[in-house]
Length: 409
Ligand SMILES: Cc1ncc(COP(=O)(O)O)c(C=O)c1O
Image (cartoon, rainbow, N blue to C red; front, side, top):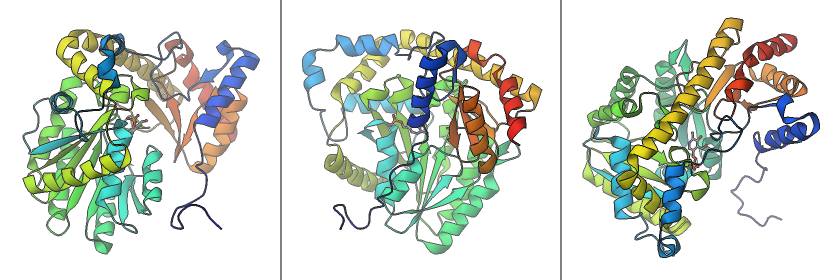
């Protein structure tokens, strides 16, 4: 007898993060903080080991009138000023397509809504082979199959694998929904070049001759890209989509504003054809109303206030952390290269991922913990969260990790 619907998978989530976070915490209490390397935490931490909460964002939030914090949002799709600022901030003038914005609970809400509403049960969604775990869970909860593309061919985006995955799906269903997490891919730290985006778009244009295409671009970490405004130029390539393609850009305040717990983000729907935009907007709005109703009013108001009145302060503060991430990751990658510790092509972002098969990974992950080094297992690799590791802890870490790897290989 079951008390949940028959079609739902009742296997518990295999948690790869929180159990290891807990182990690392316990170990710190046992052997002392200074003797443990905790590379598990996926949020931005400062050099003193504290969670970063951007002053510009939180002083703005706290200065809001209580009634603003208490109120419902102005509509199920979000407040008008929030939607306007999201569009300006994210696209930065690089796109001129018809568009609509739906405020969502974090990037999660935007990604989940797209996966849930664009595919029918039994259809397939196209995902990267190494990816944020929630994509697969979203597919499972909607009874979707997953077709994966491998991310890299040598040190660049594996366009031929992406094409193969799309062709396989097109052979068996009437629509394509593909997820690309870029820039600052989680967990490899890869960012595609403009040329790679051009190739993806021109391939999808060809696919759209026979199949409607939804391209879901998850940009959760975009505001930590080294290029900053330049890193948003690739959006201009979306202006070249055919009139049978929809692009949904999933934006999140979680990282951009270090406001993970406020649960605010947005789905930016774009298409050449206004009718496609309207169809998606109508369904997404209903999905929003039926699931979370409306979005945290204070978070939306604070985002608008920061962009309108504290932009310089916010930019300055964020850039300090972009530079810090660069310092940490450059050091780790440099030392890893010196000792021959193999990692996926890293450009920018919160994580560096070591490349290995899953058997080695499992043995290695245990061996690392025996040496008080805590990391997160991902498909075909070990994720090292440089976002939460101090420069001091990173110094010499790659060499130590290579020595431990040599004992399990
Ligand atoms: C790749 C990726 N996409 C989306 C998200 C969504 O985060 P949130 O729902 O907090 O915005 C995350 C968070 O870890 C992520 O890593």
